[in-house]
Length: 341
Image (tube, rainbow, N blue to C red):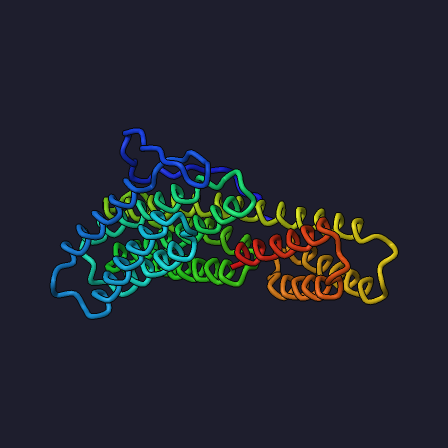
């Protein structure tokens, strides 16, 4: 499991004005509307900086991001989940950074970073209202990790551009190592496995790059290294939060299954007992794999199948409390699946 020190980003500050307050699902939360408006303004500024001579791929990326923001605005208005659209937004932002490649000017790079920072802020605002609930608290970290990955990827691209004219073989090797580390982190997060080793290696290689560059580097390079270091720190913090949340949700699932077994009692039929044994086996495997930082997708699927079969075999025989517990177990598994990617 992740055990990283809590760190703080020194990214571009957000407006100091106190955010407006709105009510969602009987909870009073800071409004995300102003942040969303800021993100849309950032996109307009970036589009203008890129200009009309952009490639077809970049134009498509900008259009996709605009569509994503419209979808998120609709989600906010209808009080529905924003997780899917936020994930799509961060993915499209990363694609834009890749498609811009070496063609991005300093102004475009700056505007792109401003956009990524405000998208990260938007993600935090949109999920902040759920920090006290079982579903949204986990989703909060999951969405933030995706936004963090997008920011770190853009930072690495900016650093690569800033060092494109550096001919030092050691520095070039450092940059390649950082790119490989980031790819490993992203792959681990996508697969739902532990990113601990990869994130530690990324931090170490970033530190090595700073030493190999020395003190006599240009402002653009210094800025790129600083941004990347700060955002890697934020990524490690949110990964730690996501891992802790996953552990808590596994424990909650275990408690719900224990309650279900107690409610069913010892007089259950042989079929029901076999279903409970299958559920227990899947849950044991899930807990072990989660603790080891392995992919738990197959475990979740097996547990859910066992829960569904148990519900079917109990059909017409279960009390209201047992049916409620069956639903709680199914909900717990769905939540774990969403956190696992």
